[in-house]
Length: 430
Image (cartoon, rainbow, N blue to C red; front, side):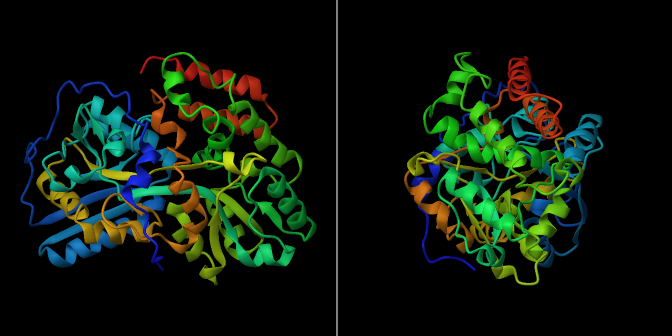
């Protein structure tokens, strides 16, 4: 399943190179060292909660850890991403969170590393040896005030997961420009195939098409856009975000989405592409395994960068540290939980997780899932940017983005009004 071609770590530093999160110092750090009332690291059941796109990798390393640690067991469950942002965050604040739980890299959501670390809700992992291998350009996604609080296996690409048989039926190839994409969609539609499956009823799906487009419409022209936003010198409403959102609506107006995207879930969209009813879905490579699992012919599924402009050289790609895990600062089994994360950081286990979720390992020799072949030129040319929310300064922008996209798709707002709402959320104090 892996390519012989490796991607050097230097080429990947650009992915998060500018993403030093504006995380403030943590007032009171809990569970340093062995952790408050941590139990023995050799026994007991560890409660673990993740999100669906972690399952393929997280379960593998948990099973491997269990087989090599007698007396260890785990209770693993998964929650929808929107519930994680609310219910799990409430549990953390109330002191009854799971021992190990999902955390998003960097900043920008209620369950992001920076937001939780700032609130003193995560255990410090800095003493673990793997933390010394985090490339400098990625540290903003893992660290607050110089301390590491999250483990993630590596970097995920964002583009179009597509069904090769559906493309062959329409006689088309992966497009490299926006005009080519529109032409491909027209030909697919003419064959009775839904060009793009969109499950916008699931809130986190709403963001993916803008994330795929703005590297080309914004960052190719203004690579320091995030810095300018933080300095108050730029805005969503007066940037290439306008072009990206208008192109999102253009895809809808041309009938290139399935009927009623706001009434379609992520799972339904996945099934549509896996079975060939739809040709593609804009997604992160971390969920390739879920698409493959839903298909009778997994090898028919691959990926390509989703083009945003008619200048091929300007079609940069989004790539970012994938969703990770952390230890609750109030866990009564923090010794055991930390031992598991230390195990995850060992190269063999890191590679196992990274391969399972089709991402590029955080460190060490990186062999890439063959589905990511078309992303390699952009990586080599340093034409990749972090997922947009990883540099947003608070937890207000992302849910606002979710909501305004659903309103746009439902015809209840305009692009200008939607981006002004995002600007207002961005300017709120963290």
